[in-house]
Length: 124
Image (cartoon, rainbow, N blue to C red):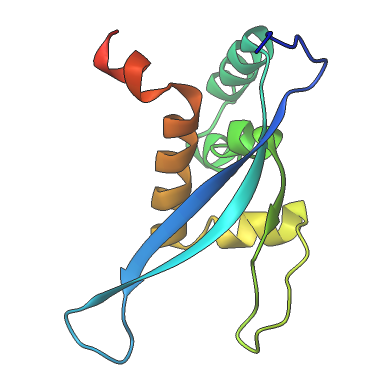
């Protein structure tokens, strides 16, 4: 397959969230959905990191800590609310989801895995 040099490279990636099972003490359950990422330009990512580092207070830096992930996100599939209704992606809802530790840990792990193939991680 030929490499396609796209203006914006979009791809879907599976996300698996492990969280405590509310009905089985000491047990975990897995929830999953599919997340759409966009490739982020390296220069833009570096500039964003410097911009956040330059903020004068820790509080200001904290409010921007997920900006790169937000910039890399375009949407999701198979996300529902407690009643089983589809939850449409929006930055506001995504920011709310990032407040949940289990979700945030799973998402950052999946995003990191999406950036390097298994062969690249092994050093091949």
